[in-house]
Amino acid sequence: NNTNNSLSVCIIAKNEESMIKQCLESVKDISNDIIVVDTGSTDNTKSIALEYTTKVLNYEWNDDFAAARNYCLKQAKNDFILSIDCDERLINPKTLISKLSSIKDEIGGVMVKVVSYNDKKEGKDIFNSKMVRLFRNNPNIRFEGIIHEQVLNTIIAAGFKLSDSEIEFLHEGYNHDALTMRKKQKRNLDLLIRQTKSNPDNAYNLFQLARTYLALSDLDNAEKEINKAIDLSSDDDSV
Image (tube, rainbow, N blue to C red):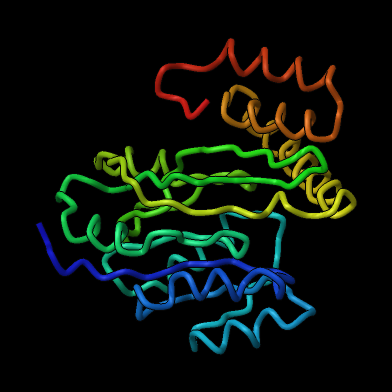
C-alpha cells in the first residue's frame, strides 16, 4: 500500500460561473494538481477557475463528453484522479484522503456516492447513485461514451478491481429552472440517440435514454427503451 498516493482533480466546464467556485472550494485543499478544461465558456468560468489553478485549458467542444474528459485526464500528473463536475461538491474530503492512503494495489477505481436533489414546490426530490469517480492515473483508464460517459469498463479491462467508499458528492445539476433543465435534457437526448445508434445493444445507454425521455415527459418512448434495457442487461451492467 502506498500511504502517499497523490491526487489530481479533473473538471470539464462550460458557462458554469454560478457553480464552479463551490466545486473548486470543495477540492482545493486535497490536491496540488487541479485541471479545468473549458469547452467554450462565454461567462466568467475561466477567470474563477484561474483563482484556484494555473491549469485552465481550452478545448474545442465536439459533442463528445468522453473526449473532453480524456483530454483533461492526459494533463494529470498525480497517482490518482478525482473526476468531479462543476455542479458537484465534495462533501467529506477527510474520508477521501483516508481512502487514498489505504488503497490496495489491485484497486483501479473507487465508487463515490453522488447525492442529487432538485427543489420542487412540493419539497425536495433526492436520488443517490454510486459512480466511479476516483481512479488510478493510468493511460489505459479512460472515459467511454459521448454522453453519460464512464471509466468503469476500461478499469476492468486493464485488470483492476473496484472498491466501494463512503466518499460523497452533492450534485446540484438538476436544481435549475424548468427551461434550463429542458434544454439540458434535449441536448442529452440528441447525444444519447446518436450513441445508441452506434451501439444499439448497450443496456446502460438505453437506460439513460429512457431516463431522459421520462424527464421530457415522453412516457411511451421511456417505457420502450427501459424494457429494451432490462432485456439486454446482465449482472455486470450499471443498470
